[in-house]
Image 1 (cartoon, rainbow, N blue to C red):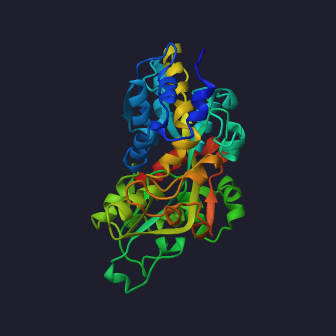
Image 2 (cartoon, rainbow, N blue to C red; image 1 turned 90 degrees about the horizontal axis):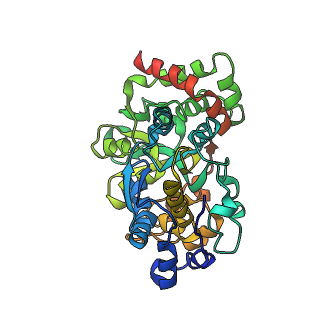
Length: 377
């Protein structure tokens, strides 16, 4: 694979996008590259931040046609199907950490030479040093640190002034009556259920690995199952909250920011035991040379210091590069400080979890089948 990544383009990439005609000319050049890309992501506020921060600027500079598929919640299944059919219709796929590990383990994603194929940090650091621990495997190109947590309505009269400030308030139907919303997948739900069933954080995955451990988590979830609306797309909980169909529900912290800060909905965030995760790109196996060249050219641009800092101006997810952190301050249009809305703000991470990526990569399919069977009962 022959890529054209000019050193001048990398250096100029840390400044304003329109600050250098030389940069515009350099990034516009892509040797033997396809003229279109299909990017898979999650839709909603997160995909909008990707579009504003780097997809539209890249398209403006290069003329490439970018289309989006909002199917990342089923990314591995879609990858498997496309691979088996011998027809890879996706050029680049946004996934969470565990799904990237599964795709990498199954040979569905390309391994990346980070220091050779990605842009250096604005401070001169190598990509591997700049991304640091967010590089969780050889196939995963990190973008952001996000969390899945709970939002709740701030105007529920039946709560008599009580405010949920503890994860286990989700399971308290007496103090906080009303419908909840939870994702129709086991990840995070099982950990939260066990925490509220008295399991210590350090023991969560030992319990889940033990005989009856998953059943124990499902039994805890049984206590609220009749009061739950199950979601599959991240946009559902904010809409359910806004419509008053649920009083609290899980979703990505950026979705809650968009609903509260941007749309003015009476919604607040419950940060207790938020679940941190990394989100980033994987490149599917099966691309021809021209498509691969285009994807890697785009990745070099879209994951540089400035572009990841720009993304954090549109959504409350922390950029994965250390060199991007000092460049983020206020929201691009609202002008408000973003720190209070970041999952990595010390005030918001008194209690937090990090997904055990290896455990989920090893157990996802079996636990998913068990969870779906439980849901259907």
